[in-house]
Image (cartoon, rainbow, N blue to C red):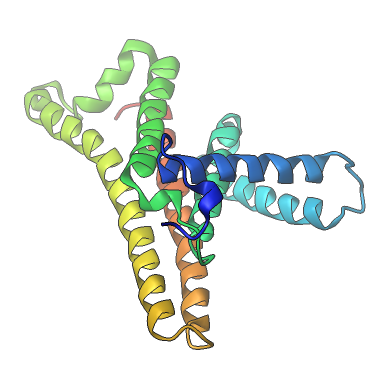
Length: 217
């Protein structure tokens, strides 16, 4: 039986329960940060401004100023993945991102958004992205490009899932063997890895979407 009985649900899978928990937590923090906007921010507002500002700077550096219209998607992915990753560090909790259903859903969101953006900007000309630099190479390039694009959600989902699942397993083993002060360096390493995996996911998402916005060469 899971140590947190109130999160056990015979109908809803654990990763879905934790996902709703994170959604509620982020909504609550957003409410606290924005209910009294002040030039001298409170602690919650200050933290959220730093995180959101950092994500915005990263987006502008990666996609350019024209990529700001996709900031809500990127920021939502970044905040959700980071919170999900960090949740598993707390003993008794699991990361939703250590389940393939979660990571595949996130990766498919990026995959479909990439092509929706491409078609909305270029129309039917977006197909030129799959044809290569010359029409004579199109029969060779089209299968290669299709496989390349289909591999993106696979790599995004498996990378995030594998790293977070590995973290949770290592943490469980360490807490079982040495439950006192020894796990503290492991906690620090897991926090660092959780941040890195979040940055990798959102950076790749931004690069994929930015690539679909460019003219085909």
